[in-house]
Image 1 (spheres, rainbow, N blue to C red):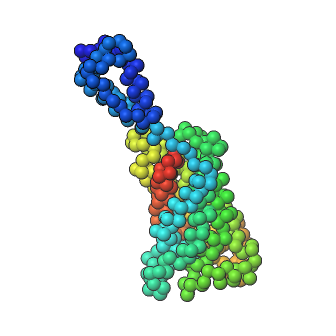
Image 2: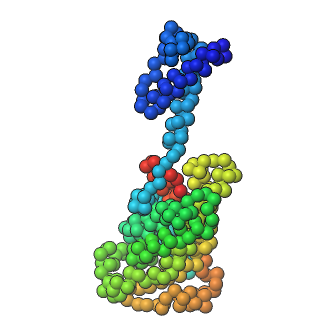
Image 3: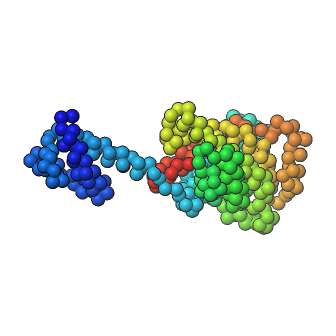
Length: 350
């Protein structure tokens, strides 16, 4: 550089202009060649101006990148609302799969025959039976299970990528358990609506019938297995997703908040979630599908023993394919949706 001495002497001017541009948004005025700086009698020639421009633009871009990369963390309420929004969006696409899964679990029919029978006798709209209760369930259970995970994880000191896996699983278990208690009534009503193969029962009629036959306790039938299921499901789902993101980032070099990273991690979480949750899901469905005016099982243990005795141990994984067909896209869509909402509101990704 021909004018190294001049550039060195004008460092103070250069940083002053840079600071003013970044901090206060002031316009940068490039001096005429005849102007001098700092009383040193140093002239800024065109080559020096070009160098200053390049450095200034580069550093401003670096500053903006650092500013944008530092995202805030959502509060518990904010994250819960965003989790519920993501879940209510995703359920529109996964509800038909869940209806088939539920009917396969309570009958001896296969997936194809269930789909064919439902379509032939009830029509296409039958695949969305119980969708109002599904919205209520997602707005309570999944809002807490999915949305509250990150704030709870951070609160117990497991927010860093290298935090112990057990702490991440614990955070998922806590939010899953609380969410399942909040959403259990809607789970019961949704299951009854999905397995009803006759004319759809009006929402309030179903609520009134349940309350008349079994009281408030009827809405919490199967709550024990539902809590165990939710603990297992969310600990596996959020734990594997959170840990999986670290492995994906390490092996691919993708950013942690990249949609590609979220997609691969959520798909992996969906598979492991199906393996661990399927037995509890089967028992839960059988308990919740009991008639409103009858009690076929005394509780989770009784239902588990009778199912294994009458149908064999492998029957606990009945409906594995439709469960996975639901869990994989459900986990993927929910996690991609909440990551999108986090980014849209300027929050740090999970």
